[in-house]
Amino acid sequence: MKKPIWSRRALLKGSSVVALGGAMTPYFSTYVRAAAPPPSATTPALIEAAKKEGKVSWYTVMDLPVAEKLVRTFEAKYQGIVVRVERSGSERVFQRIAQEYASNIHAVDVINSADAAHFIVWKRNGWLAPYVPEEVARHFPVDHRDPDGLSATSRVWLSSLGYNSDQVKAEDAPRSFADLLNPKWVGKIVKGHPAYSGTIMTATFQIARDLGWSYFEKLARQKVMQVQSSTDPPKKLALGERAVMADGNDYNLIQLKEAGKPVEIVYPTEGTPVIVGPNGVFKGAPNPNSARLLHSYLLSLECQQMLVDFTGQHSVHALVKEKPSRMPLAKIKLMKDDPAGVEAQSDEIKEHYAKIFRV
Image (cartoon, rainbow, N blue to C red; front, side, top):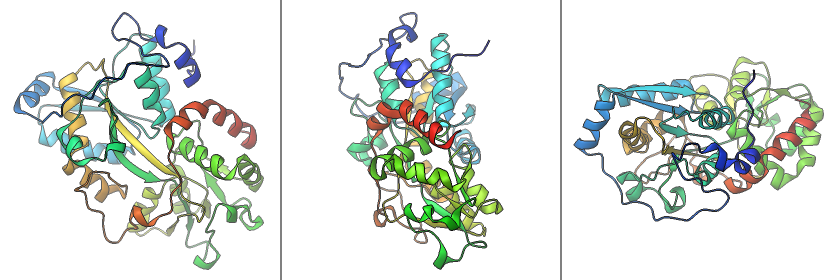
């Protein structure tokens, strides 16, 4: 028998049922706001308690090579703790956690998503644990910290355009979303799918809000190659399977270009969708001390700087430095992030998108 597919709408409607056995108090659609707890340092006592647990489960949407690199450095720093990485697209991670909690299975310790709207649902359901690492309190902007201490921004990236420089000359490359509608790009475009990828869900919301669904209706006539993850369009460009990408992410293009692949990044003139990826600890974490230790590490200067250097993504940690060779976030015209808007419209976005693109 197939496992049920949970929509966000169904999750919100059934919150009181999903939180089984009195393990947590669901917040439904409204909840009492509690003050964030005091900042917590990574103390010898926490490290010792985490080592006694000896393991931690991290559900993440980061590229597997990136997640594994961060995990290896954590395991080397805190020897004796093994990290189990569960990597998938944001929507699949969201569904998996819903199914596990519906069965009273608490397997996830730490969560990372490419869809900040998921944290609205988890917070409303009372599934997240309040925990504020000391570095977050000291070095993260207030608007990148949950006011109740339930999550913090682990990374920021953009859903840009791009092209294969072997197939497209710089002067002929699209510079805007509108340029993608030129007949010369018919059969040459690749893009991701919002029903799989949190990045693409967020980007689709921002583009539809700013440009209208009529833009996607016109784009669908371009015989677009449809893939799943936001990591797929950059790969298709590098392989030469498509000449142009309509969305995806800029950090994979940065990595590919720095590795000598024939790809170029385009930040569209209308503005580029911006994606915020939070990190948090689950209240029902089976390894609570290891969970807090890993969460603290992922948001530390050491890990955040490595993330920026290795992946080409951005950090909100005030002490992190970007590479001079890369375009600084402050110089890019951005669309406005709105996780609450995504959370409210996600099911409609997936339905409308599937109808337009017939996928």
